[in-house]
Length: 445
Image 1 (tube, rainbow, N blue to C red):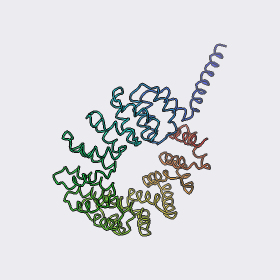
Image 2: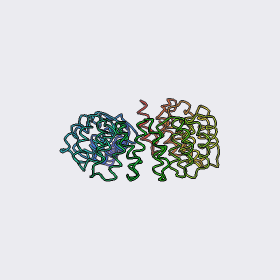
Image 3: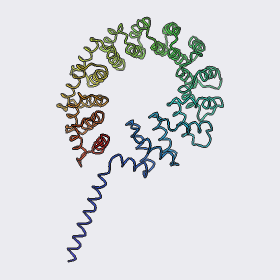
Image 4: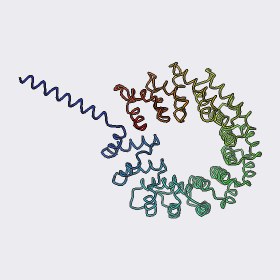
């Protein structure tokens, strides 16, 4: 009898363990995240916030705000501020203003995080307090305040910064950052002062560079002549920023100038010229862009030319990019870059070509790298035509390929592919179970 009782107790204990494990397993991924916020350690909460920032997931903003109001942990609060900064969530505005207007009761790290928050959200009310920090030379917050002022300041702050340039206490590095802030504010009231700096050959090179870009941002037509003249400088960095400044102008004169800039010996000059050609659809640059895309010694320039060719929306440009995609002698990176551009800028026919090549990659494990790269690009877009290729990724035996398939599914929510995602979520041996379950939950399943 004792043996029977012991056997029954053992059975009940085992059943209880299995039941507990099943019950725990049935907790939704979203509930697990909420539990982490409520009961987790500092490291667990900050790790979750890092994940949400990476995923650009704002669905838990309300839950996170409750943690912010109750938490006394500085690292957690700072990470939450970073989360709301990334998501451009304005709910911390009043708190941020109250702290930076009287920055003495909070930790330095929190104050700097809130200054960055004000800059990212362009909170105009913060500008006077940021100016006070600079005037009072508050060393702990100086650099953050200077950068943020460029984002949320106006004409008055621009004039203040232009006058502040003459302050002898400023290091060269801070003068450079101040010039960046002036460019971000985009106040034409400072144009004459910036041109004076640009033309002063005794001025620090980097200060002149940032001043060149700043007058371009202002889009005053008088800047074009100043910048074209500056391009004659022997310093390659100054030439680069002259091109950056000119990239704000869509004129025939600038279009012809960019053809010349694409022949510059310094690769960053060519890169900036390629960007400008794509931005303004300078079709006169088409032959130069194709030449550089084929022959440039710098891959960064080549791939910048790929992107700009796509933006031109010319048949000759699409023909070149499709040739790159189809050429198996090209490296995976080059073909991936072409796929990226065709998915973003191409027509239906070019996108179909990318899907066909992705399908071939699914059938050949030697092409995994290209398969992954194309899949990551596909996952950026909502497109019903991606349903078949998504199914192929989900049904792959390769876990990394399946993971990308879940990403494509999450972006598009193909209802007829729910069984494939559910199969991954139910697979006890799969390392993708949590990811699949989260995708299903977001789909309402």
